[in-house]
Structure formats: C-alpha cells, structure tokens
Length: 287
Image (cartoon, rainbow, N blue to C red; front, side):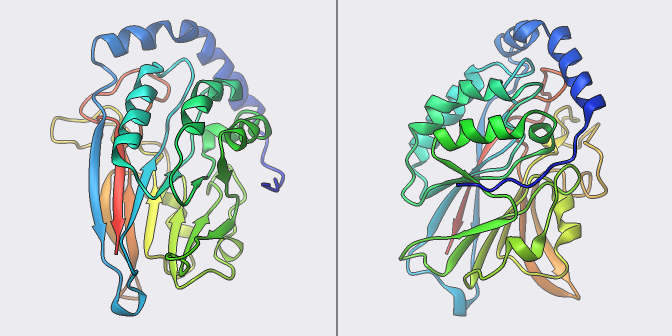
C-alpha cells in the first residue's frame, strides 16, 4: 500500500489543463493525428548494462520501461494498444513506468487499467509519478494504478526476490512538482540499484549516490524534432536538453555513477503531434 505525502498544489496549472482538455475536444484532434501517422510509430530500443564483477547477476534481468503515456485528449488510445501488445511480445521480467500517465484529469487513466492489469511480469510492475500526474488528483490516479497491480513508489524502494535478491527498485519523487528525498528512496537497498525517476533533472538530487541504472522520461525526445533527432523544444529543466534521449554515462568526482537511459515516452503532451521523435518502449538487459 503506497503511503502518500502531501504534494504541492498548482491551481493555475490545473485550470490551464482543464482549458486544454476543452480545446482539444475530448480527443478529436488526437484521433485524426493518429490516423494521419502524426503520433509516430512505436519502436523498441534495446540497451545492455553490464554490472561490475562483484555485482554480477546469476542470470540477466530484462527490464521493460515505458514513460509519458499521457492518457487523455492529447493521445489516441490506440497507441496504448500498440505499447501493451509490444510489452507482451517482449516478455520482460519486470515493468517500470516513468510517470505522466495522464493529461488534464486523473480519470483518463481508466483507459490504461485493463491492459496494465493483464500484464504479469514475473517480478512486478513499479512506477513513479510525473509532473502532469501531480497536477491532477494523484490519489485517484494512484488508486487506478494500484487496481492494475502497479506499485507506485514515492521515495521508496522494493527488493526483488531470488535470484535477483541483490537488486532494489528505487523510486524518486518528481524533482519539481513532488517532494523528492534521495536518502529515503535508497535507504537499506541491495547492492544493485535501479533508480526510477520521471525527469533527468532528478540527477541534480542524487548527492553523489550511485545507481547502476537510472531510468527517466519527461523530455519526449523533444516530441517535435529535426530529422536528425535534435529536439526543437524540450520541457523546462536544466538537464532536459542535455539528456533529451538515449543512454548517458553519469560521472561524479570523475568516477562512473551509473547509466542514465532517457526514453522518448509514448504519448503526446499539449499538442497531439510527434515529429521525428517516435514513441518508444525501452528494453534494458542488466547482467
């Protein structure tokens, strides 16, 4: 059972989200955008992370990571069908979700619940909340996710069972709209840490603490990018342009401090269009 702490309240932002909901006509524009191919085509990005010899796993751990679904008027629901079908095909050991499940209203997550509930990775489903999630009723949203079997981590961690009992899944609250606490998120973890956070700006809060894999979303890869993938616009945040997509090796005091993998996400934010920044599912194999 997730224990919720108080979140910041953003009444002006919530009003703007409701206005956006009305302007997008209950998904009318998203429907046509998807039909015209302007949501992009879901792809799968594969990464391999090798642990140091003293942390080697008995057998590789396959992690599926999806972020920024943005259920609501900006994203056509068919993209979620594409996503969940691909997760089923990939048969990961564990599913991690990087937040921003909805845009505008928490109840839009209902469209995700049945398909999320039907996915049964051997070692569970874990999530963090994103900024859009904290602009809506996050208690309602958390309830929907819990009903689908997703464990939402707010500065919490969970150990995995054998043969991965040295691995802990850690969830850091959103750096700007939540109440992040890295000390609490990594307290009493195993030797191998997988850190889940919504935005790459969470790196600013790590205080030198090492994780073996750090997974983030938020940037959408720009959502609208140049043909070579360079983002035209990225969300606000000091690290969002530098780490807008892909794998980045993190250094602290000249030492390796973990591999950051930033996903382009799945859905659309604000505008129901993706250009040169296709939605993606990340599959990361740790061994």
